[in-house]
Image 1: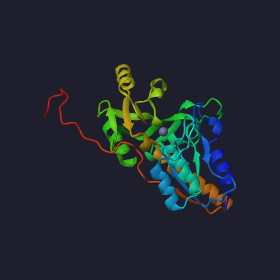
Image 2: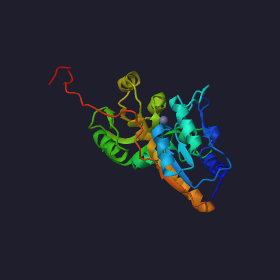
Image 3: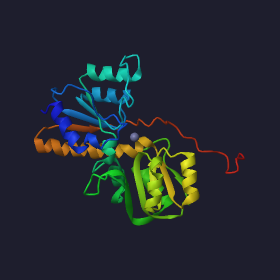
Image 4: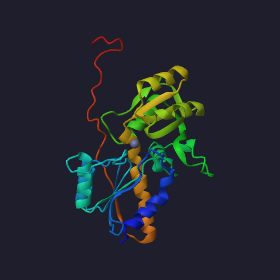
Amino acid sequence: MPRLSEVIAALDALWPAELAESWDAVGTVCGDPDAEVSRVLFAVDPVQDIVDEAVKLGAQLLVTHHPLYLRGTTTVSAGTFKGRVVHDLIKNDVALHVAHTNADRADPGVSDALAGALDLRIVRPLVPDPADAHGRRGLGRICELEHPLTLRELAARAAERLPATAQGIRVAGDPEQIVRTLAVSGGSGDSLFDDVRASGVDAFLTADLRHHPVSEARAQTPLALLDAAHWATEWPWCELAAAQLDQISDRHGWGLRVHVSKTVTDPWTAHAASTTDTTGAPN
Ligand SMILES: [Zn+2]
């Protein structure tokens, strides 16, 4: 059985910490480097439901995409919800390790997993990492569809292939527009609009898109936009990451049991379709 330090070293090789943004907080949040690991759980969010799941599963390591503390803290009191997470993890001998923007930039990374879930052919990173001579690391991915789809069909594919959420997929653009090329970025992608426009793709699929950036992008180009729930765009990475760790475990004869949480931690829980027409008048 491997020690936590050995498993973490393998994860750090997949998603080197130096690939992370300077504002990010990646790496091991809690855990004893000498503790033995036999079971690992991957999830997007280090929230209480996921910690409870890890404890119930008997995992010694929880790997999440999102950091627990992004901006630092002066307390881990169990009276705070994040402090409660820390207490429950330590009391139950569960380590927490975070791979965030380092996993976004890695090859393969979060957007590769998103593209894979939609059966897209990856062309190159949307924002390449200048340090990568192979041209495969970076933020977002430019992709091609094997067979062109209408925007409506592409949205239907995303709704079908990504895990179900209350939001589903929001679309900006003509539903009959033909899409041959698109950019994808797991998580909040509106900071990438300039790069998406410069790439000349037909569509951009990401999450957390806001009124003004979308409105401005639509006014300047025929770029179609697809907005999925943040959690849903990053969840495919958990499956990719788990498969990568499984392979490493096989290679080393570690015998790890690697799990992916299916708990939906998207904070939005319901959706009501509008009952007024586009003029705002009730139907
Ligand atoms: Zn995210």
